[in-house]
Length: 92
Image 1 (cartoon, rainbow, N blue to C red):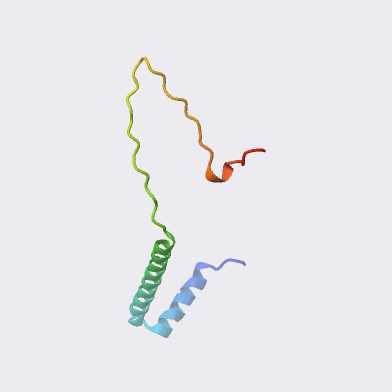
Image 2: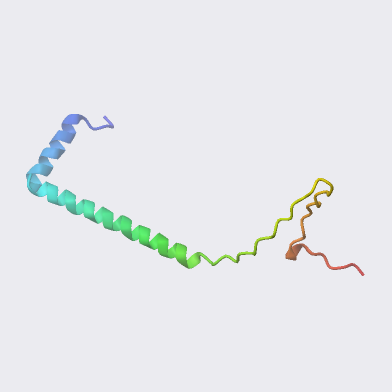
């Protein structure tokens, strides 16, 4: 009782064909498709404009020259430098 049968959908299709006529139905569907395409293009343009306005140019650091390690030298220890906000003031 909650779902519609195939006979219900055939009756709905027959009523639509009577109201719109078989000749008008393709033009109505074409207009609907054009409207959907225009809506999607508008959404795409809006997201591209929003992405351009929020994107800030990134500062690029110059590359660090790599120095080859020989078998007799040890690799330097990698330590993380504290960030600018992590620095503690010297104690008195």
